Length: 381
Image (cartoon, rainbow, N blue to C red; front, top):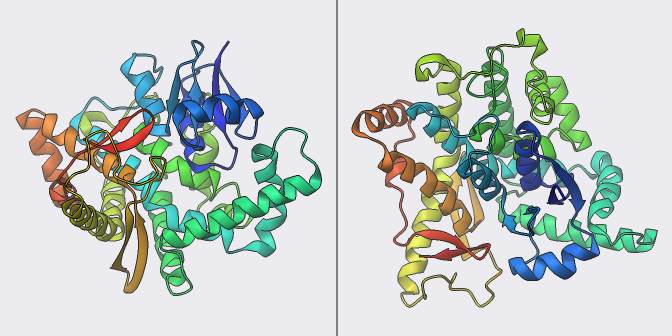
């Protein structure tokens, strides 16, 4: 038996894991989350309905795209290591894993759910194809779509998409696309000739939502062709970089960081740091109000819930309100842990880059208790 990846074709987080498995030539089967076996056997073991879930040949389960990648990297099973060996590249990879999966949720949700005239015919078939039970009737498939769409529209609001914020969402996404497009003029992947953890973080929203759904796919093809090609490339088993002359699968020599990449990092600082500051501050207040949370629990009435509350902040001149999920803090800790564990010389190189690009607050924005993952759940340490 090969690995089984339970998810959906249009799932942001499934796309991250799938791209990694493809690039590493790890044999796997795409399995639908609507399969009876997923509900009956997998969900009880991971304690909630969530995707992606990777089932190993021995029946072991790994839930979450970041954890799936770490699982193979820790075992030396990567054909193309996701974690760079040099300090600045390793840091950049972790920053873009955080930003890709969490910082691009607003455009991902907006361009999926606010363009029904273009997207609905596709989404109404795509969602139930993977979520409805095998052999479901057209009426049951329609009901599955309406239920899923309703939940996702509510989630979109919890990520800060509203009539008031939409112009800023669209402007920010256009700016990001232009910067990434410019960077990809010089290399097929974020850090050179092969993908790293930063690419896998970015492909999550940029493929599953923004290059696959009809409206944003057309937008990307017309305004950022290189980015669209990169989403194709990230789902190809080979390098798929003929237009670059098929360069060696190496990262930029000497731990170099091109100016186009520094521009992308500055964008992350401007666009995402206000949200990081807001949810770290909220989490610290919440923890102070809940001092008796037992280690290994999330402090919520339902262990499967992901958000501890909501907070507001000003983003691009607009007041927005977002859910606060400890999972984001978990990814932020990966950036902080990397710098803390580095030797003195490597740490100086990392902090200098963060200072230069305005991202140094990532190291000081800390929560009073660590977020850990135990039993496929995010819990407080």
